[in-house]
Structure formats: structure tokens, C-alpha cells
Length: 368
Image 1 (tube, rainbow, N blue to C red):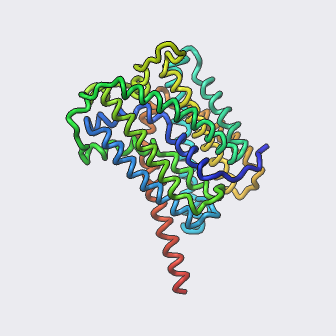
Image 2 (image 1 turned 45 degrees about the vertical axis):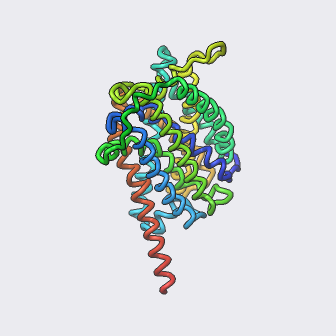
């Protein structure tokens, strides 16, 4: 049964968002940025991260404008029944696609690096069952779990990045260069996937203890993640150089694998870091299941008790979707072809439209 935990703190929201950003895209991103922007890949990461930090302010402003509702109430009241429901169905498809591709890519990474003899469908099922159990326990359980998991992700990551920074040679980052506008535009689709967890802000404001204070904490966590992302890309460039970095399949993991802590049990840092990524992917998928089931019951005008059935149905759909791409390149290509367009609409276009319509409605009411 679902717990009656419905409220989370702003600190818990920050932990959830940070783990949502820590998805599989971060494993590939340094190579993609280097391919498009060469030595300017790390400034490109900082600039594009700043762009999505600004986009997060759009979503939090929208949430503060109508803090008692979710995207379902916003779309239906501002766009009308037909258009609003079509937009919401598209959002449901986006949640499913994001979750299914994230699951497919991560199980492929785990299979290649850790468990080559384990069937990927077993890996997918285990991850989904853990995510489903977390989602079934309610909003507060997700928030508390993210608070705990944050320290198991952040502290080891900082230690390992410091070790990489000490052992790296920085001649490969020379000459220092700013990215060209064309290169950043080519990198934008991949970067949008990193911040795909921002879409959960459409649902979270009724579950916040202080919804009207949400803008700054969300912007801060986006800024801090951008800083970490920039450091990771910079260190990857320092380790491999602009010519070699695009050829690396998983440059973030491969960079960390170079570090050795002699005399302690940390001999395979890539495997240990994959455990942390597994925690992040589990939290992200739990969000997909939790908010997907919430969207379903609100779309269908059903009671809260029906959400457990929707959660189970979405879990099955994610499992099926995670097996549909025939291989790694197929899943990766599907993400690059579909996700940027959906992210562009749901992270930028729709918030701008809803904010505009809400201001027009308020202005009309005042004039009346």
C-alpha cells in the first residue's frame, strides 16, 4: 500500500534533483562535448549548464504561481480540455521514453563493465523492482532516500575527482579556448538530456513544505551540478586531450579508472562509481514511476487508491520499453533523435506558454 507521506523539504528536493541529473548521459557527455567544441568543451559545459539553471527558474516561477496544482491542473485551466489533455499525453510519453532509454543504456553499461554474463533483462527487472518499491512508499520516502544516497554519491565522487586532479597533466587542455556558437548548439541536445529530471518540477510543488521558496534552492543545485559537470569535463580533457577524448565510449568512468588507492580495497573505481550511478538511476526511475502514476490518475480523474495499479502498469511498460532498442547504439540514437525535441518543448516552450497565459488571465481578471 502507498504510504501517506506527501511532503518533502527543499533540501530533500535538492538531493532528488542532484541524483536525477547524475544519469547515464554524464558517462558519455565529455566525449560528445569534445567532439563538438574541442578544447572549449569545459567552458561549453559551464555555459550550457548556466542556460539550464536559468530554465529551472522558469519552472519554479510557474510552480510558485500555482503552488497548489500540478501540470494537469495548469494545462487544463490555461490550455483548455482538448489541447491540455494532448499536451499531458505527450508529457506521459516523454516520461516513459526518458525512463525506458535511461534503463536500457544503464543496463548496457553495467553488462559491459561489471556483469557480462548476466542477461540484461534480469538487470532491468532488478533495477525497476527497487525503483518501484521506492516509488510505492510515497514522496517523503523518496526524499529521505535521496538525502542518504547523496552522501554515498557526493563524498566519494569529490575524493576521486581530487585524486584525478592531482595525478593529471594539464598540457592537454592547452590552448585555452572558448567554444564556438555552432559547437555549443550541436552540444545542446545532449546537454538537455542531462537536465531531463527538471521535468519532475511539474509535479512536485504540492508536495513541498515551502513551495514559494523553491526557486533559489533549485537554482543552487543546478549551479552546483554545473560546477561538478564542468570539473569532470575539464579533467577528462586533461587526461585524454581533445583529439582522443571523442573516441572514448565512457570517458568519465575510464578517467576514474586511472586512479589507484594503494593499500585499500578501492582497486576498481569504475565499478565502485557504477554503484553510485546505479543509486542515481534508481532514484530517477522511481521519480518516473511515482510522477507517471500521479499523472495517470489525474488524467483519468481517478482516486488516489488507483495509483498503485498505474505504478505497476508503468513498471511493465518501462521494462518492455527498456528491451525494445536492439542494441546500445539504437537506444542512444533514439535518445538523441527524440529527447532534445521533447525537452525543448516541456522544459522551455510549455513553461513560457503557461506563464504567459497565467499573466494574461490575471491581467484580464484585474481589468474586469
